[in-house]
Amino acid sequence: MTSQMRELTADQLHRHCQMGSCTVTSTAELPEPVGIIGQERATRAIEFGLDIPSYGFNVFAMGPAGAGKTTTIKAYLEHKAHAEPVPSDWCYVNNFTQMDQPRAIQLPPGTANNFRDDADKMLKSLREEIPRAFEGEEYVAHRGQISRDLEEKRGAALKALNEYVQTKGFTLIQTPMGLIIVPVVNGETLNPEQYEKLDAATKEGYEAMRPDMQQHLEKTMLQVRDLEKEAKERRYDILPNHDQPAADGGGSLHSRFADPCPCQGRSTLYLPSPVYPSWRMRLLQLLPGRKQVHRS
Image 1 (cartoon, rainbow, N blue to C red):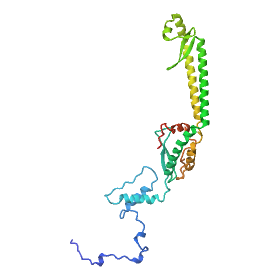
Image 2 (image 1 turned 120 degrees about the horizontal axis):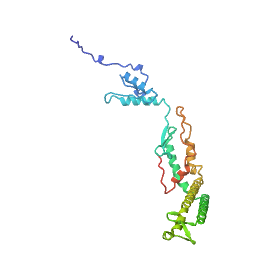
Image 3 (image 1 turned 180 degrees about the vertical axis):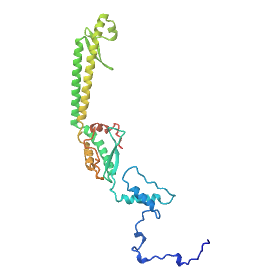
Image 4 (image 1 turned 30 degrees about the vertical axis):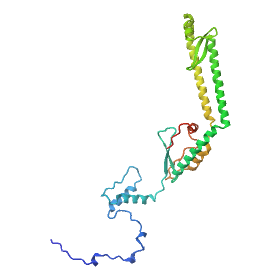
């Protein structure tokens, strides 16, 4: 069947617009169109995918390059985001307990940069205030008293041990390797050569008592180590203002950012408690000359 062709006039090729039906004076006043013209099925699929509130679902857009896939989906996302609550800011901070597992902190929208800047100011203040606090007369006096108490108790323990071994014919000698117990004959300590010259019966008597002497020595040294550990803990207990972060930097930082989470009813604490874990140990790492703590 032969198609019949006919010539069209210029008026038939032109579509007239009735300006009286327009409610705007410029196309700039018209809203931006959302969607792909002629792709109603695709736009419905995008809307359906964006309305799924669960994780694990995806929208796969396929089509030729330049078809507007990215632009369209971005426009849909921006349109939907305007109707949703503003998302929280998130940041990672160092976890002093488990260094390989940073702590995630949720912050009110738009405050993460402020938190970062305030944390930098706090650390700068701590590096100035902590050394100054350790130079205070009260702290120096307390630390000196603890050292004197340790020396007194350690001396008493070693004195008691020495008195005991002397009753058995031995004495304590301090060497570069530590304390040793050596025999005493006629008020003089014996060196290895002199000891070897003793008769067999005398050496046998000394050797029979040596296990008991060694046991008392080990028991006393354990006691001394416990005293040293106790003194070390007492030194941490008297760190200046250890109950509150130095210069009130950490306390004020916490008060500004530790608000209940306003995000969709979730209950999340932005910052840890003001009583920071192992705070006293962390002070020492901020002192000049010590290894600095990495902060994410």
